[in-house]
Structure formats: structure tokens, C-alpha cells
Length: 281
Image (spheres, rainbow, N blue to C red):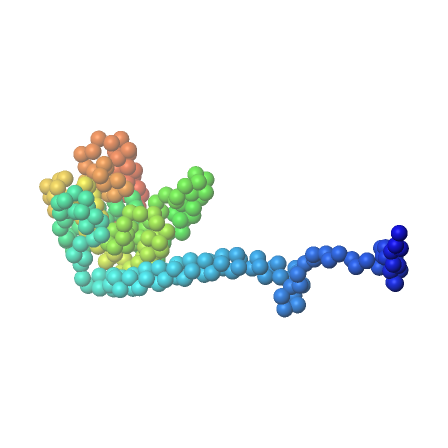
């Protein structure tokens, strides 16, 4: 038998395990630009807060734009308050509102201050704003009561408006309790007190307030309910008209409301005690 030639390099021996190359292990890829892994992850998560910030900025820009547009409209349409010192209003926001809702014009007739009974002036003052001649458009005591009631009852403040505030609302605004509307009312109240005298404010007020459904001003109300001019009203008749101011749709001469009758009697009692008003009106 032929012998198998020996391998010149000798038999192949197994390698030492320590000499075997270690298998490759997969590890984290190096962060781009040499950043640490944590920095890279933070960079990947950053677009979300950036998007939120951009969204907030867009909302703020829209809000500022709307506010600017609102202010521009108000500046263009803002009434000429000072003109009322010499000019009588041709209509009011409340009269327009009534005509728009009812489809018929209001009953209204202007008369000068001297043609309105002093009894009606006193009745309105004791019923709505007894300190009218001593304040500057806002009654601090009434405001404090309104805030207290709002806190206790957890609702919007009750009415605490002076005659000047009521006039501003009747002439140019609406019955809404919108905070922006209240801001406008406050600004107009300050202007009325600055540009007009107290008797002029009272004269306009007595000529434009609603004293019955669709009946505006002392003259129209006096002729409608008593068949006489406003200059001839008695104390009882004046109190009957003044008592209608908080709720002219339901409280007016001829109404059978017990609350209205109580209001009339309250005004008469106040008139008897408020003798100091004679020298003011």
C-alpha cells in the first residue's frame, strides 16, 4: 500500500480560543457632528415645542389683529359726545333697537329742561340716582354693593348705574352685560361728565329714557298716560312715571303689578324726605 505523503507543514492544529477574533457587536452609531447621544435625542424631540410656540404666536397675532381692527372701528364710529352740549340727539340706540324689533317707530317728543315738571325730576333722582349732583358719573357706594352682591350670589353684578351711565347706554350702546360694552359705557360716562353740565345730562336723560312700552321721554309718556304736557305732572303722576324706569315693559301707569305699586309708594316717601333736591334742579 502506498503511503500517504506527509504534509510538509505538519498536521493542522486547532487555534487557541484566545487567539480567535472576537465577533463584531452592534453598538450605537456615533451622534452626528460629534454630539452626545442625549443631545441628539433632545434635538430630535425639539420640533414639537417649537410647533407649539409657533401656534401660540399665530394665535396671539390673530388676537392682536382683531383687537386692532376693533379699536379702529370704534375710533371711526365713536360718538361726538361734546356736540350734545348744544345739539339734541336725533335718536338713540335703544329707540333703534325697539323699532327694529317691533317694526314701528317709538313714541317720542323732545321738550326743553324747563318744560319738564320739577316733580318728575325729583322723582327720577330719588328713584335712580339721589347723589347725581354730587358725584362725577360713578356712585362708589352703589358699586361696592353691586360687587358684594355679585360675590355673595356668585352671579353678575346687579344694576348699579348712575343716571349718566344709563344715559351713555341708552344713547349709544345696548342692554348687554358684555365686559367690553361696560368699558365703552365707562369711557362715555367720563366724557359726558366732562363735556356736559349736570342739568344738561338730566335734560337729555328725561327726554330719551323709556317710560312705557315704546314710549320714550317725559313728554310722550305724560301725554300718553295722563293727557297733559310733562310740565303739568303732579307728584303722584311723576312718581308713577319714575317707578317704571327699572322695567318699562311691565311697570307703567295702569299696571296692576304689586311690585310696581310698591315702587311708586317708595319713590313718594323718598321725595318727601329729599327736600334738598329743590335747590339742585
